[in-house]
Length: 175
Image (tube, rainbow, N blue to C red; front, side, top):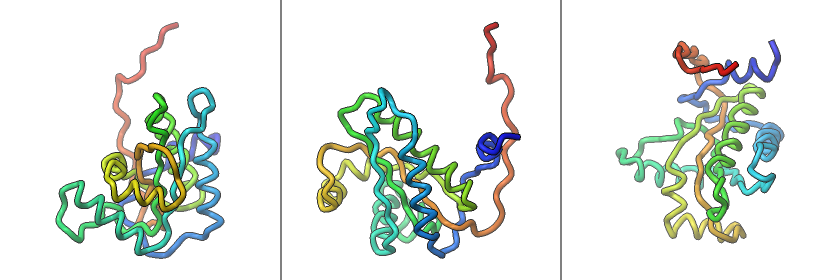
């Protein structure tokens, strides 16, 4: 089987991570793969904020937890030490589609390098707040950005889950 298709079929969302930090060279490869995602009109309107500093990771975790309505102390990132935040230009009509393709590439690249990942929502709500808009400004990121998703990345703690059985009746041929 083709290696790319094999990775697509084997990748799973991971919900238990070891605290060990992945190698920076692996994270750089994952990020590069995200930057090669297809984008409408080739605009490449998405950006990635790579968070590896534990204090900042924990601050994002707490904000995400609050938005999600969970009790304080719950970790919506399942212990992953890395959060890759995908944002897209708020003024671009294809921002959600383009950012979603970036997220898909990030997750496939993580899997290809033996790391786990999971897409965590609520980035949109986070980056609508003044606190996280200031965070972007402090990083030197100008403009209006919409949070597309968080790609939590790390070493898998446990086994890769089995694939759910594929539902039938989802393909319609016109020949």
